[in-house]
Amino acid sequence: MQRCLNCGKEIRFIATSPNKSVVCDAEKLAFVTENGRQVFGYLLHNCNKTEDEHESSGKENNN
Image (cartoon, rainbow, N blue to C red; front, top):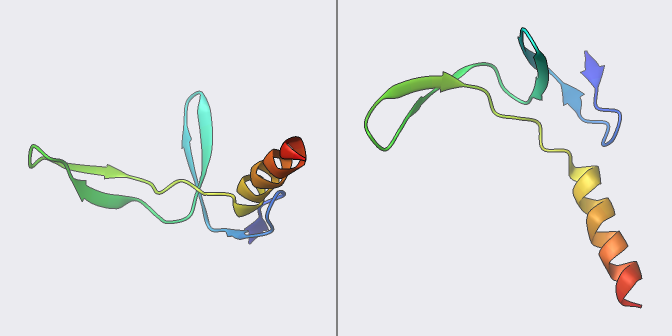
């Protein structure tokens, strides 16, 4: 199993297309849009460490 280099969370799925690779937290899931259509997609990895870094940098700028 791979780990995120920023937050250390285990990465289980990587979605790929011809020009792009995206780290995902879950396998392909089915979603229903507001129009009632069923589409399939992935939940993207939300890196917690990057959010914490943004919050701490904002506090440093305020001082």
